Image (cartoon, rainbow, N blue to C red; front, top):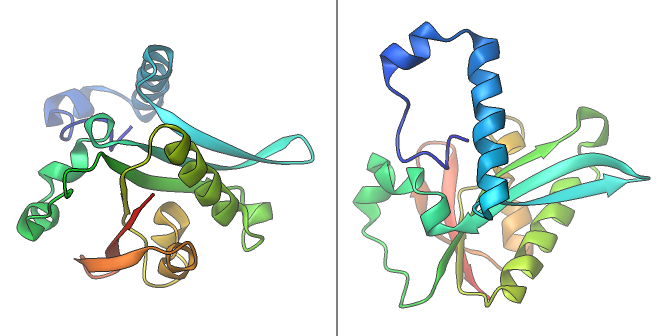
Length: 163
């Protein structure tokens, strides 16, 4: 849910909720977005079991990035194209390093293409491990034709591709 919210929740709200309550709230908020058609994701299956997930969506659905100080400094232009974002991945530990995230990325790009395409950006890690487990690796995105636009913090890069 972090990328769906325009900013962090108020500190007093976070402090009054237990971890379980925050998790339940996030689950409910996500369900509400899905019902409204305002949350996009790809599930990756292996032998009928969900083993991975890739979140994507148009800029309007994932506004949190716009508020980040690193992003604001870049003064990026979407070149008049619809801007899509690929914000995060999840892969079951038992299935890591088997191409699950790559399969999710390819499926997300195909889904974006079917929705009219545009400019796609993502924020992959420059090396494996954390934060690559959440954002994907730079090499994975380069393999799909993304180009590095700018560094994005110490560990990530901002990449873009038009489809």
